[in-house]
Image (tube, rainbow, N blue to C red):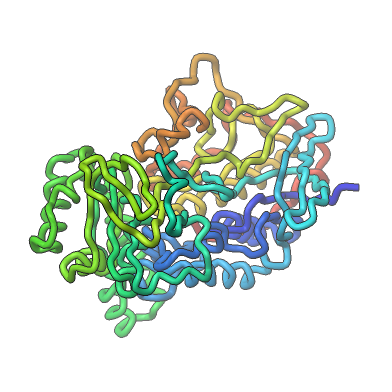
Length: 499
């Protein structure tokens, strides 16, 4: 016998916990359950354990609007974010609704039963079970938790030192006095390199191509000052509104004036490095926001460069040797430890195989509706955050939209909702095409499509999405509703979390 619930959420990270909080606040009587394959909540912030792990978005916008981040840290460390997620779950009773250690292998929708049946496997024992739900919400993010991206490096098998991927960081790694090479130039590498620099004998960041970097303060001094002269909740609310506006302005400016934005960013880095390294290591071949900017907390990377503890090489790898890496230029980097910070492998739905009435769902051939629902898939939502702003901004408004949708379904006596796209709407664009990062390009063909017109296009635009999801009409000719018994849909409740 399968366990049953009203709403089943896959994933107990930032997205899953946030979505559950919205649902429980709006529908206290709703049976909302969460399953997660890990043994703890936190998702990304429980998985990654490398030195210096932290957010690359400011915490005033990365935190939930319904439970503001009440510290003056700008970029919080991983353990602090994990604790924030856990505290939020406990405050709303979500922690009691989570089943840990269960991987969702498949999820099958039956129109005859108006139910999802999710096949679960216990990660520790291999035991299988089933859980049924009226509505399914995927909150597993967009990358493969089992394996990060690792290029096929020639000669790697001959290397005698330690070779590590940040996604599987060993708890007992001792790098004191060791020569370290970190391969990569993205957010992970920019975090790891300065965090290891004080203990390592020397650390080199080896990059194939540079990334735009921008120094950010670790503490928001303005908010700290405002907290002394006004109620803290006002100060934090102001900081959130300010940072949302600032994010949108920076992104918009970079898109409209790419050459000027490029000059400003490079000038900022040049002032920080103060001639300690060649600026070619910080001069990308693309324009700002074709890939995400890398935040450098308190300029720590630049400080390490000026002190001689850190060096940067921009080159390609010819081969590994027993002692280290030979570059295409002929230069050899000797290393006791090599960290392969080469990015993620994208994966839809955490690897869960979806089917509708016995037919497999191929997400690469489908579009998203308002960037929340999935074309031709009934009673299913996919929480997918922003690529050009804080992930959680989208979580809050997408979860609020799901609550509005469920309320409308109850009001009208409908038990099933399915987005249906008109003919000729599908294009070959993908939902993450706005970014040209390597991990996006590698998995482009596995991502959902864009439509020619809204609501089948993903906007990545918080103000427009907010208005659309929180104020726009729920009833839409693109949504197919099917009526059913009143007791099959969740009952309404007047309270709803602010979003």
